[in-house]
Amino acid sequence: MPRFSMLTLFCLLEPLRVANRFGRDLFAWRLLSSDGQAVVASNGVRIDVDGRLDSLCQDARRDHLASESRLMVVASYEPEATVEAEDRAVLRRLAAHGAWLGGLDTAPFILARAGVLNGYRVAMHWESVPAFRQEFPELAASSALYEWEYDRLTGSGGAAGIDLMLSWVERRYGPSLADAVGRQIGYQRGEGTATSRERRGDPSLPRSVVRALAVMEANLAQALDIPEICRLAGQSQRQLTRQFAAHFGETLKQCYLGMRLDLAQRILADSYSSVTEAAYAAGFSHQAHFSRAYRQRFGEPPRATALRGHRLEHQADTGSQ
Image (cartoon, rainbow, N blue to C red; front, side, top):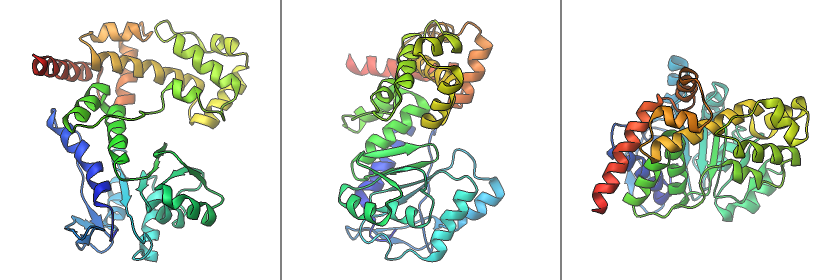
């Protein structure tokens, strides 16, 4: 958007650019404006763009918005000054097609006025929180640096965009790559993504959910069956499954599987362990099942993660000599 924050834009793009340097092209991006014309940032620098915002609607009809696509709205001063009804209509059409939408700094105002943030926690620049709460009392304004819920991402912008992008890199390709990118740009990472330990610290969670998360985290290497987890958590399977779906958007079984797969990914990315060793360490006795589940969660076979982790470890070892 006109008068956008240059700092926010560069903090979004630079971690992705550096991530691409460590191997194959993992990320790609293009810049869009409402009318397809160049945009002047709040610091007076003029930035050329690659196309119009409404071109995404054509992409949605043709490609059904591939799951890899993301739209991030970057704004700052006077976020609504140049937003037209047609722009809000584009955002609503994209949301109706299941698009992943995000907004940083003051951009959550634009998304909220388009009606695409209902039911989501919303983070933004701290100066804007009081005004946002007054205008949108029905939305849950958050004081976090960013909120990432399913297909919506909002955040404070600025340097926090680096943490956000490193978190994204870690989710997709593991902590070794994220840490390597952070070192390359000279950035000390803040809080990461929502691990089970961080989830347990959420005061809104029922005690039974907190107990279940602790049980699962303590039994990643030797997987328990779901009824046993429920017994140890002191809650019925039906009720606990309902609670997990309400708080995390996934079933108890899906959450436990994800935790074990995340452990396997960390092992493969951070060590010289084989795929078989990582699978056993995460409680998988059948390699075929492990490989299928891993590919479904991370978009690549476990061997690809292992090879990339070995390469990064080797680069780190070489650089320290």
